Image 1: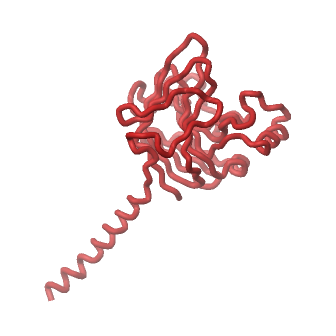
Image 2 (image 1 turned 90 degrees about the horizontal axis):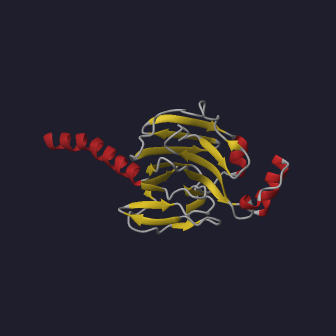
Image 3 (image 1 turned 180 degrees about the vertical axis):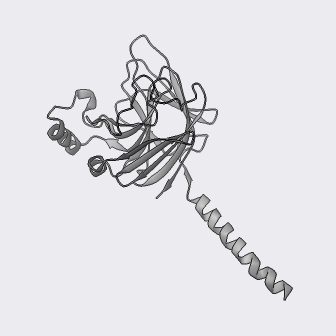
Length: 236
């Protein structure tokens, strides 16, 4: 009788342990800490990306436009986590659901903006929703329409000088991004920042690549760097 009771009582523990293990296995590392396997350069940029001390390290190259190291795989609905450390004078970002511009993208942009896309934003230009990363003005975590002609997709940061102080300057910061349908939410160091629902953007960018940005810099400045680590994703 005692043996039977022990068996019955242990079943729930076994069950929930199995569920917990299965849930943990949903996460997929996007960076192995040693190589850039699974990542490729998007068109138009010349910034340098390499693996240094277990991080993806990006370095500006003077004269280069915005550069992006993107995942070979594309993703639709997902939860993404990573840690990032950015030079105080460098603007950076994490692209989601992004891709190189096609002729169809260019035509859609012409019709929407009534303008001809600039040469630098032409065919092949990596574009889409971007989670802002920088350490000075408090714009980090807000969502920008990189090279889309849409500007800020989430409500523009409320204070152009200091929207929030969630970023620890010169240190590692944890970002979390949840993209489900037209809704995108962002968190920095466990605190919520943006909560965007934009059906129009979802229609043009329901799926795409994750991209790590090294922003272009002015002549005579830099070099500046940014590094990412512990990048993982689970599809929803």
